[in-house]
Image (tube, rainbow, N blue to C red; front, top):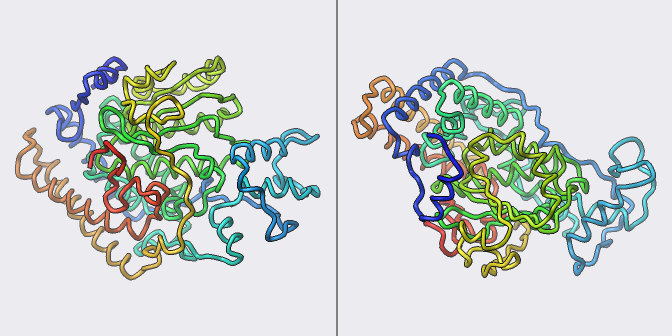
Length: 474
């Protein structure tokens, strides 16, 4: 089924989502294609069940900084606006030799206290920040990361395991395969190629470790700036993410830091949309400049929306009040596919936003009446205590693998005997196997995924992923 912007807008105007071509609402032809894709996937997994993919992750890089010249009590005033602090740090990176990151090459010249303080304030991780405040190391995560007890080598990832951790992250594995089909115009072979690419990317980039670390090893600056926040829901009940584009300052730190932040955010949203399946985003371009949207970050973000997290969004609302946006749009437009383009709408005023979001859900700072403000809250020492429980994790992992094998067997039988009747006994057995896999995955994720800011603030339930914001579906 082809997606059009007219259809997306109509959904919001009527308040009725178009469920055609979605799990539970497949046509006979679409079910046939889904069965064909599952057959290819299962054969691929069987042929590569022992394949280990080497990790070569840009996301796991560690920034090296020398703040030894600073005393333990050196501090920037807490009353200072965090956005202004970041902008000043950004300016400090521009010296006589041009734009240069402190310590990025060669020997770092001696810097004054203010420059060092700004660099630390912008670039330290959450873990480093807490350690500095307490004066000693605070173990927010276990010392050693183990991908799984079945495949414990942290330098590689097992292909089959990566696939199933991704597919079972939704209530039903069909949801993810459906996304791959829909984003590839229901072409089974193209969808299969897309699945292989995403699995390889997740393994190579060690996305599982990004989830395990949560925001503990993210740059504190991205978190405290409030670049993005879950603020409510749109008119279709999809979670609404509000993004302040002007607060994205990639030149203030190294590019991989922002990329890791973006992947972490998308991963957190996959958990939030475990049931809803989609999320909407309101991008506020008020006061932005081209420095907030460098090409390499824009390209990375668009690629994630098309490939790694295809068909994740319900609508992308771009609130624009600047002539500079034309330059930004010229950067973005060539990389968009038809599906993502159809879900992008432009809003010149808050009235245009109200077509998609009720006024009570729109943040007050852009003209709505939603006064919710999410202030970054540092991780608490014991909030990830279950990540230290190796014994219970191993039990949960064994149970998860058993449910994976059960779903694989049920799916093979369903594919082999597919008749086009969605209520036949094989479909029912398969759906039951999917429910059991869902429960096993939710249990296992308690030991493999750190709590995130949404859970810490209480806007998302840690067990179910359901929003606790007013108007959100439970």
